[in-house]
Length: 221
Ligand SMILES: C[S@@+](CC[C@H](N)C(=O)[O-])C[C@H]1O[C@@H](n2cnc3c(N)ncnc32)[C@H](O)[C@@H]1O
Image (cartoon, rainbow, N blue to C red; front, side, top):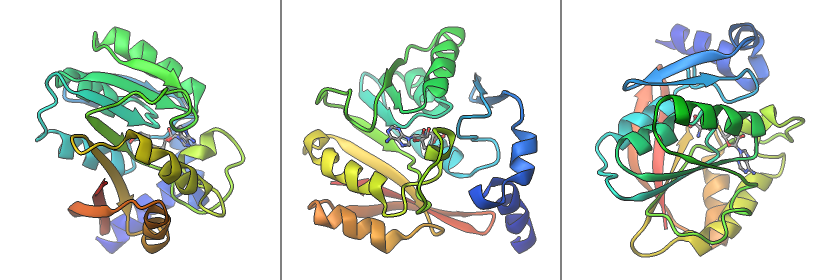
């Protein structure tokens, strides 16, 4: 297992992505539950990473019928499209315009309505309320040098989390639920401390170990 994990890390880890760059040199389809989306090389790749699949599996047990759903930072959009298939009214936001262009196409091709919004975190979401917010954040502490890198790097001083946790309280109510996936690879205590500075609690609701790596889903309130 250790060897397999090391191999997958070699091709997916942002610092070791020689293999991944070759694999993702052209747009690649990604399918889940009969939905297919095309993932552009500049967009976060769900094929070889674990977090997207873990969130998709986690969602399968949630009744999303007639719920409003936001995927903050939608990347390939597969989570948004699946939420739409499960009956939610879906908003998919991202700071990556290429990602949004491809999600818009996939929404039409799969006949699954998703409203795509170009937004830096919540900036363009106009204080709209959602029953569910799903976040698979960038978490490596390094300054992103391109839009593509914003899928991986949260800023050397965790700027992504500082901004996210200062904006999030406006979107939280007693009735709605926000889930965020993180991995043992990230600085969990640092991220929790930024949440706590904003009077937010991160409660562990699910954990799984895949290819030797522990992943955690937190509910934030
Ligand atoms: C780890 S990827 C997850 C993509 C997708 N949600 C998934 O699970 O496959 C993080 C996504 O967040 C987006 N992102 C990063 N910073 C952002 C910001 N400030 N505002 C909106 N989206 C952002 C990235 O462009 C990327 O698509």
